[in-house]
Amino acid sequence: GAGVSQSPSNKVTEKGKDVELRCDPISGHTALYWYRQSLGQGLEFLIYFQGNSAPDKSGLPSDRFSAERTGGSVSTLTIQRTQQEDSAVYLCASSLEPATEAFFGQGTRLTVV
Amino acid sequence: RKEVEQDPGPFNVPEGATVAFNCTYSNSASQSFFWYRQDCRKEPKLLMSVYSSGNEDGRFTAQLNRASQYISLLIRDSKLSDSATYLCVVNPFTGNQFYFGTGTSLTVIP
Image 1 (cartoon, rainbow over the protein chains, first blue to last red):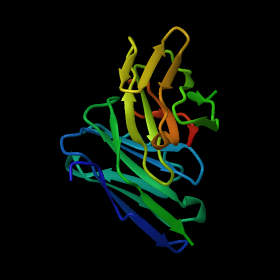
Image 2: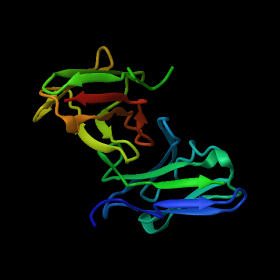
Image 3: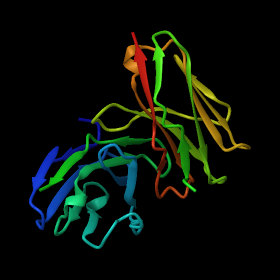
Image 4: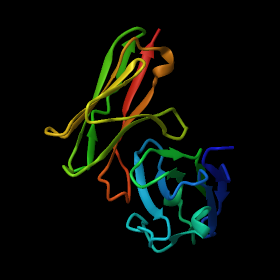
């Protein structure tokens, strides 16, 4: 498909386990964003990638969270030693260039039990 | 102070009504402005960009007032399918992140 693709759609994990979330942006989009949204809450910025520049990690809530973007395309968000408060929908978006229209994937719903 | 502030509503309007949403932003250097809609348990979807001169897309009209740091969205002839949460989004053109308002909830009633 031509849109942003995220996997898995849903993930249930036990507290303390590590999880990896994947985002496949729209082809040719240079900017990639990760946000998360807790139930009934607004979008919380996590991290931003632009081309080959160093990512903006200012939104990552703790050092348990990390992300990488390989070859300027696919990105993975890793959460180590998951906690119950990590339960949320993790949304990835991409845009052709910084600050232009961004398109979201369907999200990964993470539940930590 | 929040980067983007919106009236959370909810707005409950009858079909065919005209409804307006407002939003203010705090960073006067902001350059990119958007409205997104988000349906329940779905991802945000781009509704329209907002340009300095104002712009229209069918029943939807967006306005930007840079002096007042204010953005608006007008929906005419509301449809049941317009029921959603509308998110005001601003990017200060450092590009690093989009700032999202908390959203305004709209329900269009038959």
